[in-house]
Length: 308
Length: 328
Image (cartoon, rainbow over all chains, first blue to last red; front, side, top):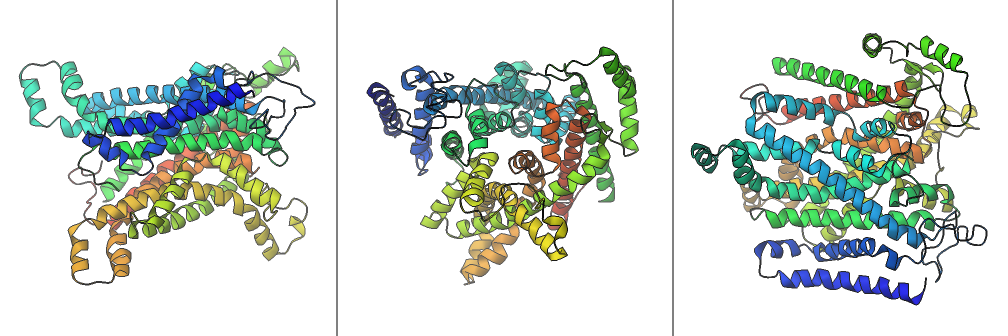
């Protein structure tokens, strides 16, 4: 860790704080933004998220070492935090800060991408079931019933075990493909209540094809709950990825993810607790921030809701 | 009500059957095969073929499926390749442990969660509410297994108040008296149940607080306050009773959460339950065990939501089941 790395780290921290405060000041005119930032933790949460995203993007600038490099297996094994290694080193003498920074890339990317898969699939299924009803609704919703009946981790245990060394893209896809059930119900309910409204009837009466009615008139009104469930979804996917990596079937080593960093450290929890504490705290911070933003978004996007 | 119950049970059975088919198909698509270990140990192909024939794995997939379903209907979930024991026997020893852990966690989850939610709602937007709100947000966001590790570190390693793993003292247990045995089990149960219960309580409290505040904004509460009723009575009798309904919904959702948590927590605490069994079985490609665990977990989930639906209809006379399709 050189002064240059410290400087970059501090600069990113400052940028995140300025970004969050700037966002609050810049949007002060809008009603939705005012409802959003009325939450006491919202601005802080936005800052935390910005900070971790910046760190993930600028990973090579922040990380003082190669995240997979075993620096000095005798001298630097399980060293506590120091100026050279601010978060310490792990069992294989790898620098934990570097792993945490590059792990942010993997964990955030897996969380975001898998959420996108899940939410878009859930939206499509919900729209189809809610708009066309009849057999389409019946078939799709029975499928959702089955999907919701199996606790997700068991589904994932089975699905993930189909590969011996899991490619990251497959991990993202399996998490996404097992996570859309609840979203589709949410969207379906929203569509069912919208499709009976007069303006949708009017669009149909004017001869608009179903695709146009769905995309132009029904979907935009179902977007608010989708955004909220997306914000909350990233957090739950990150927890899931961490859980799978912890069980040894998620992100394959030596690629660092916050989950497999905890898994690497769990055997030394008594002698080198810093190896498990820092990645765990990173997950907690980011997921808390995501949940806080989700809560604030829910109020911001729904003017009828009182702030609770 | 009876007609509704019959239809609801039929749907539950159909769902479980679909889960059986789904897991069977998924697991038989796996490229790995049992009896061929992933490491360098080489097995004579003739031996592998013999084993495959012995377990019926050489038959067409359709035949295997029919055999599997028929056996399941006779209460036989199959034979564990890696443990070399009937799965029924294995489950009989592991499931009670999981139920014990989940039951204790569920009690902590709901008692603590509902209490915190009530306290927060009664002091909404005051300092205590904000502090507790951040605490429940933390519990709601923390990875279960990581919290388990931290609790082990603090209470198991440093303070040494509780054991770091297992479900009983492996040496002393057989020589203990009945009371001693119970105490020993409870002592081992404390940390894993607390971890799982705390994480659940975070979600329950958030949910309960929102439900209470929604009720508290309604007219009859204002009436009660206008009548000059005591604040305590308004919250405990008028508001809480009406906010119990969402809690029943939450109960139906708690089972998948607890079983998921059990997989992780049982691994952290070496708790000999169904979740650890399933997680271990993944690595040996012992698919009958994984399928059986997934199946049993789904049966519990389906039963849980069935119970929640029935409780809901009992608790809320406004809901008439099976009429007008109010709740499908």
